[in-house]
Length: 363
Image (cartoon, rainbow, N blue to C red; front, side, top):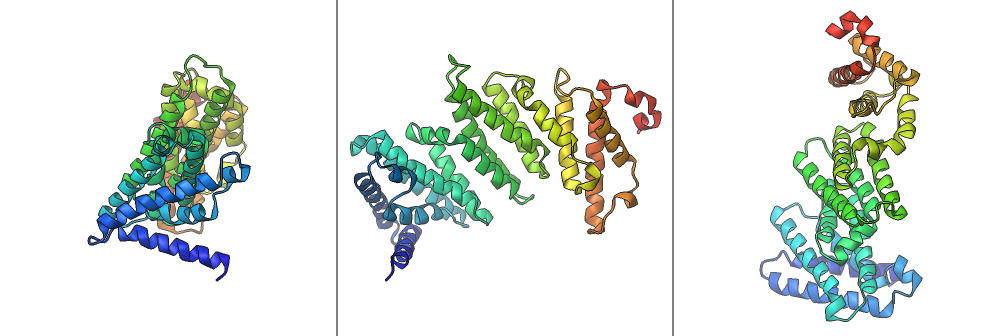
């Protein structure tokens, strides 16, 4: 049997062991066996691949690699009871891993290395197709984020990557799963709170921490114009949370990135884009215009965009309809007009342009 075939067989055996936890007659024995097996694999990995080995830091050993295929996948459950049971078992396994710094006298670096491998596998699960797998990956990230000490350090070490992963989950989420949106947002806010808590208040100008804050801000700022309303709302909430956690106003937080982001929004001709992208851009500009102290400057680019938005709001349905599904297009046109009106209304205090448009103001 070739090496790859042996690995696949081992992975299937591990998956069978995790599945046995959900068999009532075997539940107690299987759970104890899984915990002991997990601890043995972690111990062997640390003993055979010390942290001083650069390859060990980047890649897990063959046995741990097989284990990491089966362990995170054990959380992929459609049955609610089985899902809860799997998450409880995963939490117990990770707790035992963290406790090995005391019980087995391993260093924190040794244990943290394995924890990063586990977290990386949970993140990979979030990127796989199928909502059950994405949900399982989010659940795994939450388990680690809720683990005091090394678990939270693991999350803060990779917080930017985790945030990107969770945003990807929201971008792929079906529109009718509002409860699952709340679950992903709970993990996202937990990660942001851990990241901000790791920033020492006595060192507000610490370059690495400021760079991380700017990086996170940039991620959410760019997604204010996302075509998916779920992502736009999430970005707004996360920017507000970052503002509160770091004791900065939204204007102060976003100002260093303003010119670059707005330039990207202004240079896109709206009429040439799909309705969902048009709405995203208009909503992003409205958000910026609505910020205090006139965050957005009144310039030629903004006036050109406002003229274009006004034309979209006044255009007949027939002029906007494409060859797509007429019913779906009419729904999107309605949403587009609502977004246009919101932006035009928000921009009224900035300019006297609309003072000359009496009919438009009345509308």
